[in-house]
Length: 254
Image (cartoon, rainbow, N blue to C red; front, side):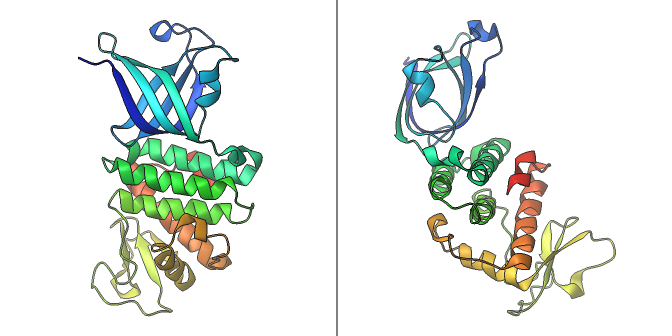
């Protein structure tokens, strides 16, 4: 049985190994990857600060990953990582880095997309590419774009065109409310006092509907307005938080 495996992978998080873990020394690191073939994988990166492999296995790098699996210890180590997308610009700007960290933590918190790994890594790569060269101001919009499309990957994105309760069609300037109790978008007539509601303004709703058909790279100039941006952002976070059971701390950076 082969112990070596090759993946198309995106590095999400890299941190220092705990001393003695599976025989790891203090100079070794643990890395978490999103792979198109098996979803989330964790592997040890051996080598000191000057090793070639250590420089290649870094957050947001993407490429061809070679893993050696020890079935006895059920441990994995990185044999090689042929990086195809380096994305050096992400760490050059605070807003880019914060949005990218939110992308990574959301993917990890949702176990890589629940099995739809090829679409997951495609979306994540496109969003990180957009962030890599983005100005400061659009980074938040790109982050919200990711959250809204990630909700679709998970199969939990609500329909923005109608009330989920009475199915009435929402007018262009109509307002919807997200019920945290029902985890659904409802109209004013269907809301009741038991609902903890989040308002979705018309600008935010129409902007979210528009970006559903856009690429992440097209968001540089697509502005929903201040109020629309806030309601779109809060809805995206609320929908995902309901599925994850928490709001990751990195979302504050979006």
